[in-house]
Image (cartoon, rainbow, N blue to C red; front, side):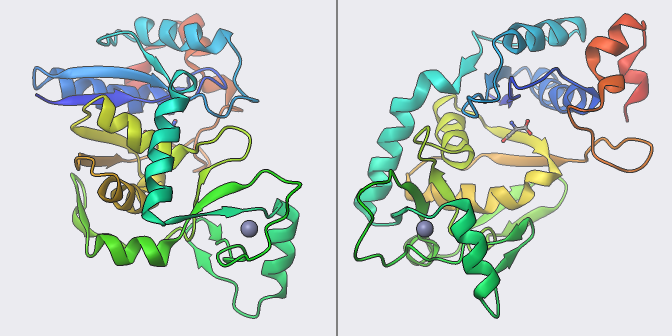
Length: 267
Ligand code: GLU
Ligand code: ZN
């Protein structure tokens, strides 16, 4: 059976872009007699506000989208992410990183050829072979991509719009899998939860296409099933900017108060 999910962060209200993303996942499930789940990606705990959990569900209800089961919260699942991290530790594919943001900036500025990815500069690998870790700081944990790529071999994923895509494990560099403050990261949590919720089709905006390369590597290292992907178009404002939480005028709440037909405003 097809299972999809909508995974908003309760750091703001839903806007038109979220409505589109939710509908894509919802319709794919419903048109195939499948299940549609909601998952709150709330590990960015300093930006989360409690009222947004219910606010988001209320927006979804008003949009006429129904979901199955109680929505999950990632903050309830930290022990599961820890188990996955421990497994990666045992495989020897992660390493502690003690760098501050500032130190990484300085390191990058000093490099003649700073590594670059689609989302900007990549971590330069400073802590990959640390022999004397500082004792006064908690580390973050990063994926050692060379090591990981060697273990997983050639990988692909299937995207409904783009077809089969070969995985480029190095695309985002040695990404953080566990932040020092929360012990996990978007990449680790999403991979663990998509498997735990038996998501068969991951639908999300095409801005996350790059992340899927890393997710396939993690799924393989952790022995998790490979879902199908659909990276849908992003909804842009009149000036071609992608919608963000600052676009109050296009929040679902505002549109609801104005009595607008949201689906009419979307492709
Ligand atoms: N929380 C992400 C977003 O709102 C979704 C991530 C995902 O679907 O994998 O864009
Ligand atoms: Zn470091």
